Amino acid sequence: MDKSKIIEAIRLQLEKDLSILKEAALIAHEAATNEESKPENEYDTRALEASYIAGAQAKRAGDIEELLALYKYLDIKKFTANDAIASTALVRLEQHNKKLLVFVMSKGGGMNLKVDGQTVQVVTPSSPLGEALIGLKIDDTALVEVGGTTIEYDIISVE
Image 1 (cartoon, rainbow, N blue to C red):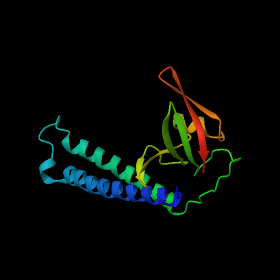
Image 2: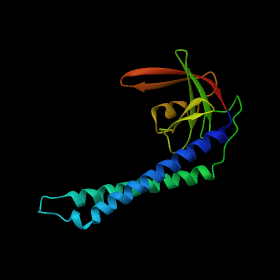
Image 3: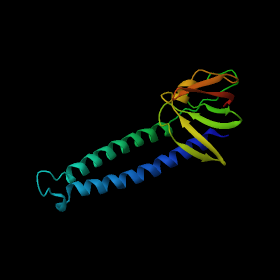
Image 4: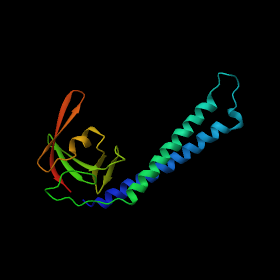
């Protein structure tokens, strides 16, 4: 699979998320500053709560803009059969005959995208699966602890 298609799909999703978030932040800001949001009594906290929401949404928008810059200037590494898994690796895993396609990134994990008809999961080294994968190679087994249970993922390929 062409990793540039994955990067483009991630960028498109981030741009969509950013657009929605900016609109929501604008609405929350308007709710916080609107004349009708003035407190009716000392216990009325609607405007204060709306300002907290607007602030959090603005921070998240900044985080997404930072991710977009990262993906815009990303140096995509070409992995060989002997290379250990690191950032920008596209890893094919198998767990009990179930196949999984994982794209390892330093930031911006948690997305699941459809690219060329396949689902690609973006993980970071701070996630349990990402942490288990970093440094491993083809034919190794990644062990992930989830709720007291160990899940084994066989590494089929690293691109």
